[in-house]
Image (tube, rainbow, N blue to C red; front, side, top):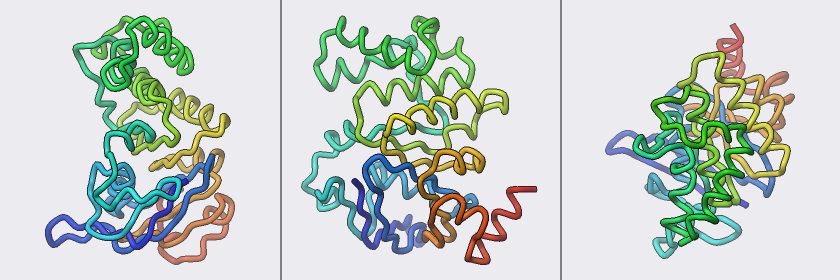
Length: 241
């Protein structure tokens, strides 16, 4: 589904990604862990070209998206993204946030978009909040609307950039439950997260990033129970405290 070859990303003199070569299979769930500043979010943002790589190549279904000839807007229709801070439109209610892209980008009739939007809100358990504006939603509800909005474009891949890090602890579970449901349905997912228990439960593989590279990767039990690299061991010892 996704192939990454020699990916580098610099911001001025700061090199954030330092040559990443990895692959992600269809329906695979990959959770990316690591300390702040290790390059996790930059990797995710490069996958849908919110950040343009400095060098290296990214392929989706065998088609290179980094050669400058790819339709970036079409790519983003296939690849939904959920951000740390929700990014909902405050002047639209929950249903309006979910239906906006299908109407504007897919030219879907409003009635059909609203039917789709209600289905997606049902999927995340929020049909009763369809006409509430973001200012009247909790953090967990906002993030679930953001997930419904991404799903409304029928993506092949979902990217999650620390989707629970801005939430109060009691709201984390409701968002993780929605994500676990998507995982169970076979959605291809790349998730940057600090939720280690969730990674153990849902991930097919875990990437541990350190200083701009994927230092270690493997099945959750391998990475969490038998980490090979000293830096992985140090990180896991710190987050388990």
